[in-house]
Amino acid sequence: MAIAVSGCTADLLQPNTADKFSEPVSPVGSAAVVESPYELAGKILAKAVLDIGFRRALRDELQASPFSEHKIVLQRLVDPSKPAASALRAIDAGSLAALTDIVNSSGPIEVSIPGDEARRAWRPTETLDVVAYNGRNSQSVTRWSGSLLASTVPVQSLKPTPLLLVAPAEPMARRRQTVSAAGEAIQAAGESQVGISRLVQTPFGLREVFAIPANVASILTCEDDPAACEGGGGGGPPPATDTTFLLHLVVLDVVDNGMPWQTNEFEWRALYVVNGVSTDYSVLRITGIPKDLVAFYNEVLITRKPSSTANAQILVNVVETDAFGDDTFPPTITLNNSQNVFPPTEYRRGADKCWYAQTTFGFPCYPANNNPYRETNHQFRYN
Image (tube, rainbow, N blue to C red; front, side):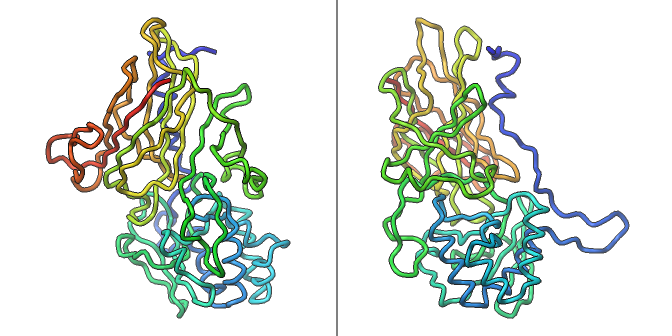
């Protein structure tokens, strides 16, 4: 069904900001502290990682993950067919049962060692601190060290050293390449952490199409929670004509989870509009984007292009996605029949920053004042 832009474009382009991972709240009039499922899981894992058998099983799961940043969902650690569950049972059967209860009663929870260098450096012969992060509005995390004593520390105090992070599960995009890590490392030195995919509208809803090499398609079966895996899928090469591409991207000071060494998950949500009526919708999703970036992508945004003769244009909303709330970069970009466009967008939060030359890809440093902002700049091209 066609959608009129005047009435529905804003709603269709805006992210879903429903937060199913709310902060824990103590009952009114009570001083009791209610632990979140992330803190409960973190407490159990802090004990488990003291055992080298569990650390080796954890390493195997993280290493085998087909997802960007080697994330796994918590279900994998309690799956009775996996060595991690056996290792947990050997440590404490009650811990395995408690962790299973958390999995069954909570929204999707992810476990990872954030940061490329940390994943390359860590070995299962070394123990790990465990950190529980409750979500978007949290300015602090709960951290367990080898003493099993919990401490509350500011998010900004965390350093890019090996840490086991327990947090709300963000949508997981596949790695663009899979490279076998040498020895006991989770991540290989040459491995690409950027996952690129498109969400395409079908009669059955949005379907994700991954841009992946054909030789790794066989591993892309989703064994985890389908909601966390985004449904999976694969696709052939994009059409060579009537296509709009994201060509260049500049990102300034966009920090995921308050941790500048974690990477970001961006979506470009494109609406194709003819004579004021929407006829097509597609989303390009790129993960593994660092907080500061100048990059060339040349990735398909939508298999349509603007046309002056057909009075067609493309509206694009830029969103950095999180399970606990998305950050939008307004204004909505309007692509017309110009072959090269350099629209900047900004998200007004954080410190003022403009580190790149104004001549970079022709992008201006936007805005030209001292207001705090986080910024993205884009160049598109059409076939």
